[in-house]
Length: 191
Image (cartoon, rainbow, N blue to C red; front, side, top):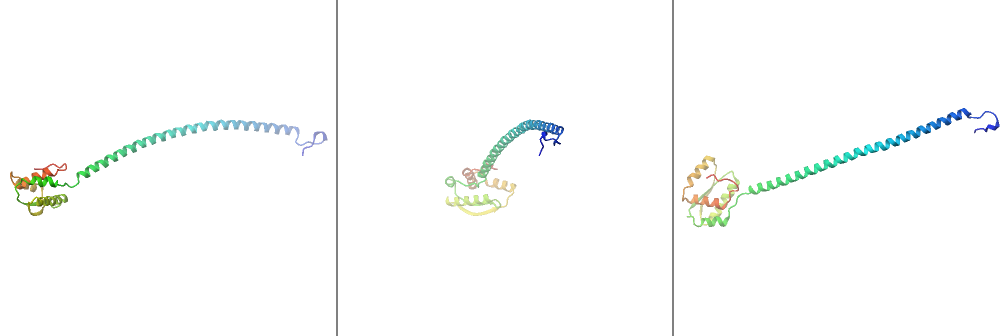
C-alpha cells in the first residue's frame, strides 16, 4: 500500500518513477491505438482484395459452368444423332422379308415350273430368304424340287446369273418378280 505524502518518509514509487511509468503507459497505449488503426485498415483492405478474388473466381466458375453446359448439350445432341443413326442402321440391317401377297400375285401369270432353291450357306439372311421363297412358292402351287446351299465366289455367282437369266426362263421371271416384291435394302443389284 502506498503511503500518503504528508506522513513523511519515503514514498514508493517515487515521483520520477511514477512519471516514467505514466509516460511509458501512454506511449504503449498510443502505439496500441496506432497498431489497432493499422490492423483495422489492413483488415478492410485485405478483405476487399479477398472479395475481389472471390468475385473473379466465381465469375470464372460461372464461365466454366456455361462452357461445360454447352459442351454437355453438344455431346447430348451428338449422342442423340448417334442413337438415331444406329436405329437407322439397325432398321436397314433387319433381314429382308417378302411381301407374301405381292409375291404370290406376281407369280400367277408366270408359267409354273419345278424350282430348285439355292442359297449362300454362310449367310443367315440368305437361308431365311430361301426358306421364305420356298414357302411362298409352295403356297402358289409351284413345285420346289430341292433346297441346297451354294459355296460361292463372285465369279461363280456371275456365271450362275448369266446362265439362268435368259429371256423367258421361269427362273429369270421368278428372280425379277422377287426383286420387285422385296426391296433391296439399299443394296445394289448385280445383274
